[in-house]
Image (cartoon, rainbow, N blue to C red; front, side, top):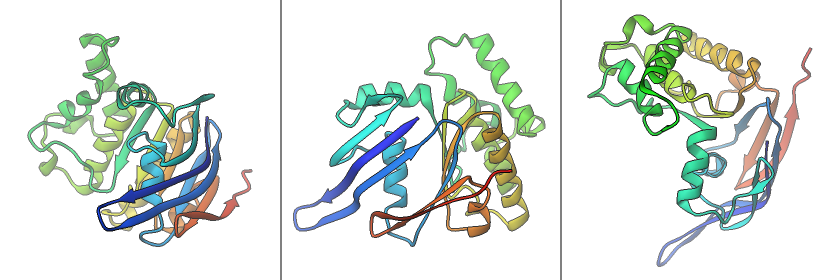
Length: 228
């Protein structure tokens, strides 16, 4: 599905130059579940942002579905991102002024090929699959942390993306709720969605097929779990 070839990312200010990624090579196949681990400041979030087309490499190539998109404009990346990628964040990033249904529907509003009728049907179906349909009219602040993350996952997958990116999706949850979220991600992956997850949790990383370890902006090890 995607391939990073000698990707580097350097952030520059007037006085400081910071290298976040150093010549990273990484291939991710369609249908994989990949966990990215490493100490704080090692480049995990930068890697996820580049994979998710929210940031661009300073050097190197990024091949997505057989196209090198490293030099694409923001408009081109935005269009590809809209149709291909879903995001889940540690802090949920739900809109407090909107109810649950409206938060999930927001992800489809820019899809001009989806009619209003189909949009609402897909939102209802996705909320049901995430077991939060009974909370459709509630605001985010009326939900538990686990319910908010379920809504955030619903928003990420309602557009049926091929690639789902999760940045510390269990970081703000208790252990039991975190396990529930990992089960949801596993189920989505089993249905064909490619998942790339940044995590500090070794037990949660074990849900993945492969663990990529970063240190000082470089890939240092990759561990593959044997799938029965």
